[in-house]
Image (cartoon, rainbow, N blue to C red; front, side, top):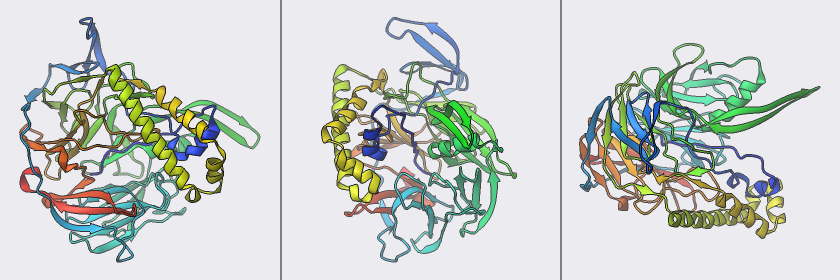
Length: 494
């Protein structure tokens, strides 16, 4: 079960040269959100909080700031005071030191365990791409089992991948390939099994192009039986299409995807898609807005899912049919966005962005001849002006969301990472994006029993959970090389 990740494409600007300078750093700031309406009615309330939305799936009355009232399912109010819980992590093994040769890692894009405790690591040769994807398998003691994956035109060979994988408990590995328009399926030993076509792939090259772009940002997780859980944060839309002899020109843009989890079923030659659950869509949001509530979801045993979609601390528990049966709430203080918060946030983003540009300049020799020439040829003042303009144009949601991430352990308990009390949500995109900072993690059962809170001092961010309390973390050594550290949790934190 991998952490949620999203990628986005930059939009054309009049300073295209500067965008080239900062390369992958110069991506317009976007957030996970969509404008798919789910309300059943809109009603005026008060001047302070003028509208509410009734969530069609959950039966939850919500405002722009979060959940206001529950009308259709069980509600569990969790304790407000934290009861501190130590994970008491025990070292098991680590992979990535490069001592054995086969365990040298470059840029990790996915980590997962199977039911035997085997660890699967997806690794690419270029950060932020799917280029050179290899999947390394080690056993529960960290010993080599298999390594597979290569580029090519044949079955089981990549054309255009996002660099990620989906692992089922029994060890089947699924790799989506937008270039092939199919899912590659491998056995636990890395032997190719079959390909399943992505739905809607035809002779027209446009859907294929759109598919390749969308697959880079799609979030995929192992579902129940023979299905994958899918969420597309950003969707590709065609603005203009023109053709001339020998040329097929496309003008495309990226918009918010629908805030919903779908099942991709792989039991036939062509995959089919089924809607599982639709989340709440915050009103009046845009791609250049920060602090928009994240749409987070994680699989539960038996086919259900847990999800968070508002600024409030309210975790929805849906069954295998997508019906929300329970909402777990904590009455934590909300954080309205003030002018001081806006100024502080912009200052932190600008500082982080300048550090990124400086780091890119120092690595110019590693970025290719064209990028190196552009970096060395553009005045620093021009780059700084562009970076500042991108950050100053950022818009703000009305309040800072309380939930920053959500995971499910192998045993089915929830780990809910809260946004730092005086900090901001972690970000995956944009110039000067703010990474995750240490914050508390609540451990609760899907039935609503609060087990405790892992203090922020542990700075814990799991990459994957496995059987018997196994948990994997991705770290870097002093040379910046990624390493996967596997540890074992004490029973209460599982």
